[in-house]
Image (tube, rainbow, N blue to C red; front, side):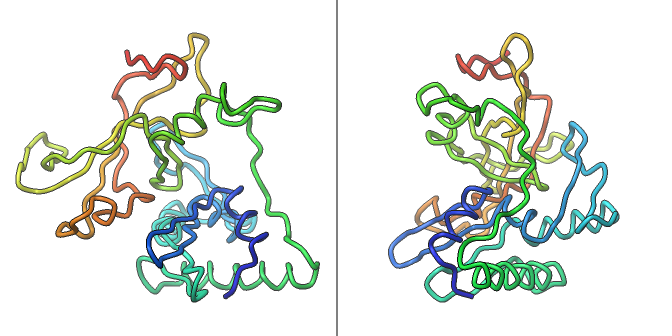
Amino acid sequence: MKLTETTIQNLIAKGASRWTKGDRNRLYLNGAAKKIVGLETEHYNSGNIRSATLKGEKISNSRATQILDNIFSAYIDLTTGNLYGRARSNSMDLLRAALDDLIEKEKAQGGTPELDSAGAANPRQKEGETMENNYYKKLESKNGNTYHDGIEYILTQMPYADGYRDGAGNFYPNQLTYYALAIRADAVPDSDGYVPLYQLMWIPTNPEAEDDADACDWLSADSARDGMGDYHVISGNIV
């Protein structure tokens, strides 16, 4: 599938991210993938899915999780037009068919079809707000963003390498793992300007990589742990 530049920009506006390095030119679909396939989810504060619909029809939480796990790390090679994901699956077939339909609609309309968007207000995008005082965007431009279980997170620090710590508190210093603190992109600050803080974790998919940039799928965190305190979106203080 070949995407026009207008379609690429439309998808980026809906949550996709363009990544280039050397001769590689990719469009990671991220949050745009949900809108493309028509998946809508509601989440508990823990990040787990509370309810889900696909094209307006209710589906099980496990089915929604399965779809998200497959499509959120999917990307389009913009040079070849090929779509790639974690595995060949019904979820990827669903995404591929929806993308083909999107492209056909664009051709028929002679432009770029609009995708549905939630439009919920948050500090990341306010009408009339400039880049200089838009703190979420400034934070994202500095440290980047990622996704886990269908939720977008904005990093408050650059990822760092350490050993692996399991849920029971056991520490394995020789098992390379990356961590970073982050806030949810849809978080609305309380009256004092604080939002919950999370710890994200990435397990390397290419631990032998010479460059950290190639060690993980940085746009898909393996876990998001809550209870890490609260982050002040303006000052950066943590309590």
